[in-house]
Amino acid sequence: MPEHEAIIEYARAFVPFTDEEAAEFAGAFTNRHIKKRQFLIQPGFVDRYKYFVIKGAIRAYVIDNEGMERTVQLAIDQWWISDYNSYLMQEPASMFVIAMEDCDILQISFGDEQRLKAANHKFETFFRMMAEKGVAFMQRRFISANTHSAEERYNLFMDRYPQMMTRFPQFVIASYLGMTTQFLSKIRSQKAKS
Image 1 (cartoon, rainbow, N blue to C red):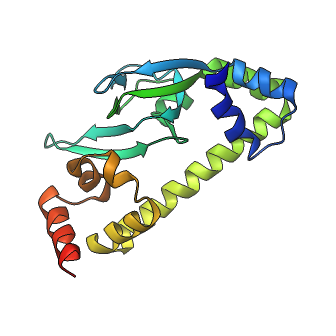
Image 2 (cartoon, rainbow, N blue to C red):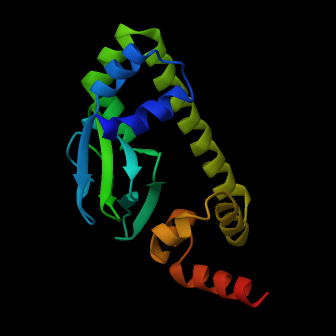
Image 3 (cartoon, rainbow, N blue to C red):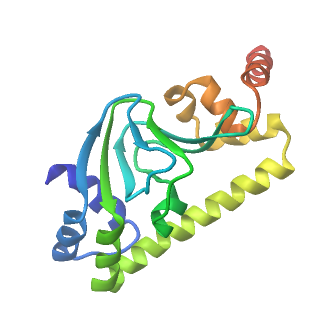
């Protein structure tokens, strides 16, 4: 079960699982290899899994009324991704989730997550902590999108996630930051000159 070591190590940074608990926890995850450009989730289908990225880059996006792609979430090594509304409510998804690189992921089904949480309070604590981190992240992102200029959003993104710039195409980063690709190019060229 070497592919499961990543999730055990990650989880133990938050909750002190015993070896038996770690084995039970990791056993609920299924290892998958996803090829670049392969969809994990598409609108209209219920998202039955939550994904932990061992290695790779994944993008979640929606298409707006004008046909423009709007990036909602990005995930790289040691990050989680899903259409959380679909996963939690077990209703049809509204997002596309696609691999931007060949990826190795671990997936857990909604049912297996519920089973783990009912079986052991440590598992429930772990998933609660992940949900809380996710809510805090989304709140920071929302506040930044509504209080910072495009250039400030870019600078914050570069400071916090410099590795993302090499993992995702420029159009994805621009969409994630709420700007056009042309405007992002302008900001990057101004930075290069200074």
